[in-house]
Image 1 (cartoon, rainbow, N blue to C red):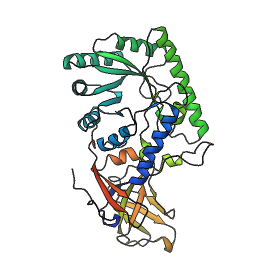
Image 2: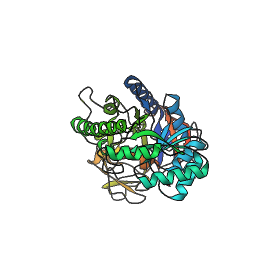
Image 3: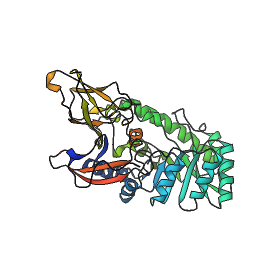
Length: 378
């Protein structure tokens, strides 16, 4: 782990770059907005820790009513449990002897759940739990439209659930019905149609489970782009949104529904970069390239500067094109970038720099939080 890029109490201008910044005021408003929303919907919140990879942030979510956390990797779950989180769902399939041994061992220390979509995988999970002397709850993952993991809805899912329920070392906890590709459909109409289709697939599965004499404690899914739809459906009872705490430039492209003009969440995660060259006279070069920003969902936006366009990144460089002489930047100037995709950008850093009063002249570093599960990909 590298040294933090700032000291507590330092002004914003003294943060070394590139640095990953949390606007603490906006971040806390996002936490409170989601807590209030799920309270009105009458459902549980299990936020996705793959967004932040931080037991510190997880604790803040749990303090606001979250029932636990979900994550995608066993290593992330290990980091969360080590940091004091006692209820973790690995909302993904886990395959491989070593990973299963670690997962089953972790279940001796916390309430651990995991997803499955294959009969052989269920057998391996049960064997690992037996050997570890632990118990694991399993959610049967159903493909509700994402075309990724998940068994077919209906009888196939019910058959797998019966296999889980019949194991002495596993328990059937319910369904994982997450429509990941719906999160970034741009229009409200597209998102509503996608979640309506997912709801139909989930209802079909629930009927098959009822015929098999099985009931679901949990029907989990939803993300930042659609959580209100799942939450109001009467089907999903546990929501797994993650990006809402930070937001990113890609989520900002979603068109809000007819009841409001914008997302209820604010941008709270930024990368601060420094101009390191203006030699060409035609553009500015900053110290934030591929190794400082994930560009899989598009390039970052420059906060408050629509006249500047991030372009042509390489490993350690980003190019800023500008509109005319009035947009020119000088050597040493700093710019604030809104990442295109928050989750993989977070995974590039060792530290969050939490800034209070981010948009004021008195902005100061208030917190330095290690990104404990950075690189936790196993």
